[in-house]
Image (cartoon, rainbow, N blue to C red; front, side, top):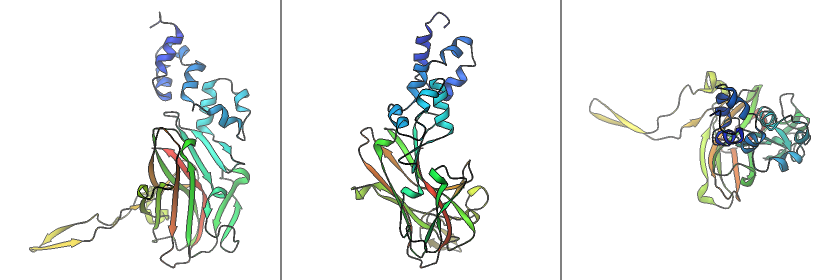
Amino acid sequence: MNELPEECIAKVMSYLGPQQVCRLASVSRTFSSASQSDVLWESFLPFDYRSIISQSSDSSLLSTSASKQHLFRRLCQQPVLLDQGKKSWAVEAGRGKISMMVGARDLAITWGDTPAYWRWETDPDSRFAGGEVAALELVWWLEIRAKIQTRRLSPGTTYGAYLVFKLMGGHIGLAGQPVKVGVGFVGDEGSGKESVANLDPAAAGAGGRSRRNPPAGGGSRVLGMVLRWVARPRVVQPRKRGDPWWEVKLGEFENGVAGGEEVEVSVKEVESGQVKHGLVVHGIEFRPE
């Protein structure tokens, strides 16, 4: 291997993932040197990264990053803000895939502009411009939607959509009341997939694991009699993130190679008639599965 040109070794490394390259760099000085190649690390960055970063809140990254490897790590560890600070854009460390979050201000929140129902507050844990989040004051009709153009995500990739949120102390109407969540392509009714989710971490148990879930359907035999129960949908439970927020999965979709479609996701609870209070919405995140 020592007899091969460094550019050749870097080219071979480009067929691995970023994490594999970092591990391989510890094997020998030859691999370590090749792993520093700007050409190598640029191959892990999204093809349009220059255009994205130049339009972001951190456009100086293109000129101040010491190397492409440094730029890659920076984008993995700290997202850049787009669209006047209403969306965030980051790169996944494992494969260099794009992750995006639509901030609360860019979501379609029913009654979101009515102060009696929703308040716009500053939260130090928010990544968005001004630390803005949406805090639920009082509603009966809870409905939150987000749309994203698939061309802004990595092609040929399965994506998951996640509501990122907190609950205030003294929240009401959210414990024991699941919400309907869904994801689908705009204009294609057949693509829509709905499920049921729980927004209360306390009801989900420690670590976001469910204490109980209804049976998926079936039966059992007791004293010669067959007892059957009605199948009910499994409830998706929230889980703690690596930051101060919680998240709950809204669904998945396949982002094709063409990437010319629009995806819509939703969170809705409009049937129980219960008053709801205390939900703090950070945004909806789209990230590779």
